[in-house]
Length: 106
Length: 130
Image (cartoon, rainbow over all chains, first blue to last red; front, top):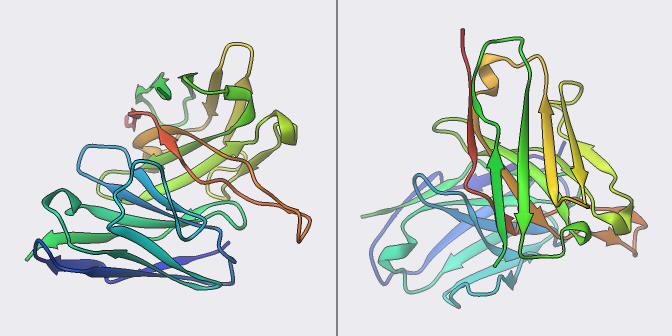
């Protein structure tokens, strides 16, 4: 199974900040990676797929980069609505999620 | 508008079975992979299983954690997907989500890929307890 490791587990930030979350795969997954945002009591919402393609309707302040084993999700100009938990997910072989990164208010 | 509506959750005793349903609307159901993802209280999401669309013959993939106890199926004529869960254990307690996403075949390597979870239902809670 492919293991996905996110860092950091928790990130404290302020409105207007630029934040970056890292996701590392236990083996190369090419660009078969998606990012999700989840708020308490809600289902996750897909933000990015194919490592860097923005899902329709997702604000352009979200961006994804990377290929192979290391990937990043960057949120520029952090907004109040962006405080949430973020997960990466590989779909190179089967599917597996990272453990999550909680973006909290500093 | 894409809608996925799960049903069939509830309280069940260890060792018993439960079948979840997912009713879909708003998209070409047969053309997409349908997956089940669960989330235990306070934990991250965990992929359980997916079934590919008709272009890939509805082939199925299961996570190792539930293989042999859980089985997925779909009925494209009624636009409903199912998750049959047998021999339920307390650690299966979770919200179970139905999701849809594109199928992928990597022509460069000649391999099927997994799927991403583009649309989600609201989930149905399964509680396994005596």
